[in-house]
Image 1 (cartoon, rainbow, N blue to C red):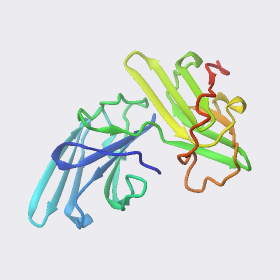
Image 2: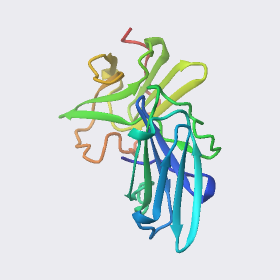
Image 3: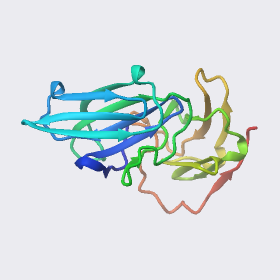
Length: 230
C-alpha cells in the first residue's frame, strides 16, 4: 500500500486507517524497539485497549469505535513506509471486523487528528487497460457516485447519505474519454464499483496504480461521468 500521510493521534501515537464494508484496518505508529511480546491488545465491542511496555514504562490507550466482533479481530506488528521516500517505521496494525457490514463515518474513532485513508482498492492490468475495484455499501445507487477523470488523475466521490461522504483521488497517465464505470454485482461480499481505464503511457504498475505524475499541463481537460450504471 502507498500512504499519503499520517497525523498525530492521542497518546503520542500517529494513526491512520482504511475503511471497507467488512472491516476497518487501523495503523498505529509506535516507538521503535518494542518487541511483540511487550504489546497487549484487548478487543472490546466498542473499545480496543492497547498496552505496551517501553523499558518498564507501561503505556495504555483506549481506542473507541463502533461495534465490532472482538473474536474475529486481529493485530500484527511490522514495519511500514507511511510516506513515500520516508524510512520504514514500526506499525501496529489492528484489523477490526465490523459487527454490522457498512462504511464507518470518517470520525468513527473520535480522534480529532486521525487520518482516514479512504478505501482500499484492487486492480488488474492487461497492457494499457486497467480495471480498478472499490468496495462500496450495498445500498449505493448510481446517483450517489461522482467520477471525475483528468489526463493525470481520477477522482471518485461517494455520498450515500447526508452523514457519510467519501472521496478518493488517484494519479496516473490516463485517457479521460476512455473511462467508464459500473457496479460489479458479482462481488462475493457486498457491492463493488468498477472503473475501467486506458493508459496514455504503457507502464507496469508493479508498485500500485496511479503513481504521482509530474505532468500537469493537461489537467484542464476533464471528463466527468455521473452515471453509466443503475
